[in-house]
Amino acid sequence: MSEKTLAIIKPDAVKKRVIGKIMSRIEDEGFSIHELRMRSLTKEDAEGFYAVHRDKIFFSDLTDFMSSGPIVTMVLERENAIKHWRAVMGATNPAEAAPGTIRRNYGFSIERNATHGSDAPETAAFEIDHFSKK
Image 1 (tube, one colour):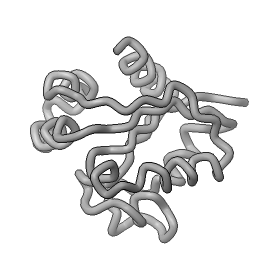
Image 2 (spheres, one colour):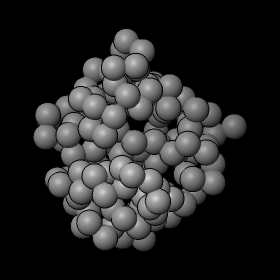
Image 3 (tube, helix red, strand yellow):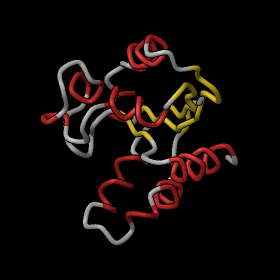
Image 4 (cartoon, helix red, strand yellow):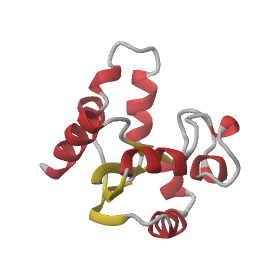
């Protein structure tokens, strides 16, 4: 069954100029790209998006990073989109990500790991709605 997920190319990957490489990989993996947009987040936007992590020690650093430069947001669609996109991205820590994954190829650290993806259908619905409103 086809499903949708949110994907973000984070500020570190935008700065590295690998947007095209990541988007090519997305298309090669059979995703359809919807609602593609480059944008910049304010600190408040980032805090709203990552509100689920508000009580975690990394929250301030994460929201500072996500508001530090432009990002690319996309709604991706394909069968098992959430699970497949997470496999293509790789582990959160690029050093632990499998060879050939986006985070292994383009990530720098746990925080600066090139991409974001929804982790569940409920999260995807919230995240897609969050960015579709803006």
